[in-house]
Image 1: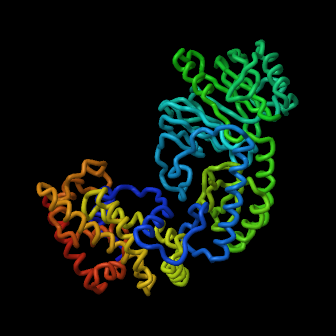
Image 2: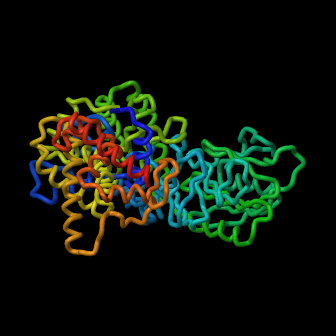
Image 3: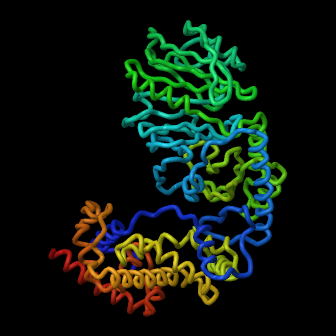
Length: 391
Length: 179
């Protein structure tokens, strides 16, 4: 019965068209709704634990559930403390359906608000406030950076720290000059212009970085306040050089490098985020219209940082490294036990257990509220299961 | 990755015992199959959603009676389909002017070049079938049931289900081919 005839294949395709596409399901909400329609039975979930299940195979042993529930409750309280300590009002949270999709391989909707998808290609973003997460190999001194975008914007290889692009998308995302906003911590600047940045020698204070850019491009940095943080801003046009590649000047960030086209206009905003230099680099190709530039400035001005901390990123990075080592080669249950032990001793980190492409389990702890399982190379999400979302 | 019978049994037992997490795991695996089959059977996504919600409520109460984990998916889908058919009948009684199932205006209203069957012809052909036959086709070609699962879902033998499906296919092929 497995072999389909030609007509059956056509029929199956037609019926697929009649059935709407598969959609992410908030299974725990459905389960709770089903349970609520009748008197509840013997036991339910511990409050505060969000949906967690292994996508396709196994059941959760009760002791592991209890451990994870305790862990989640602990982290929940810690997360609340973080918010209180930070003393800052976070921007609107992404809707759960976007932030908690349990199946990253499924087609993603284009929501009006959510976490910018970590995809290697251009992906259109609908109008709304979008949160940018750091790649898992980069430490940012905050949990999220959010921008208010209109419908002209696309995500472009955000997993590698590239940034946002203003549409429309071209066939080759790398070769089409377009208005863009990049962002990263800066670990240093190349001392000389060229196709590739030289080893970084300048920085890392905001003043040092701004002065260096100012000297290269012959502009005076101005003072700027953005999203409650102080820094320097430089506005200039990249000079048309005589070198034989279109890249003239680069800067290196943590886990990312950036380059600027000759003739493009740049606006650099370098902020001091509790001691870490963070740069928002807005740029547009030569000849960009006033409207385009105004839109770039508007998006930059809309930036908000969520839960800025001088320590959270560093801790999460250390925890992630330790947890990944501990989980390597272990079966799921053992991985889960290690997860509970390690994460419980590191409150404030956000955690997930992921299944890698080889079918092995690994722990990924991140300092973000949106949990996404990434390959260790920071590339596109692999087959993964979101285990815990807080809160 | 497949679920072993032992794991499935354990999952069902946990869910039947009131473990919402285990039940949610079952929901995650089967919800979309149920919804999509219902959508084909009644041609109304709203009804399909409602029916699946009702089916999960039934499943929450009656899951403990399921002894064979191999029957879980067919059972869930058939419960949802039954709910969908009842809801559909009730709506039609109230709205009296509704005809058939061909009222959708979504993405499937145009021909699918990959299928070779005009979408509207297929809808019309499906609307002329008995709902049980629509369910059989949807379970086979949308949810991917094999003959054994189809038998579980319809209460017939696997061989009897194959024969019924073959007759249905013959009828549809003739109808759509002539169309």
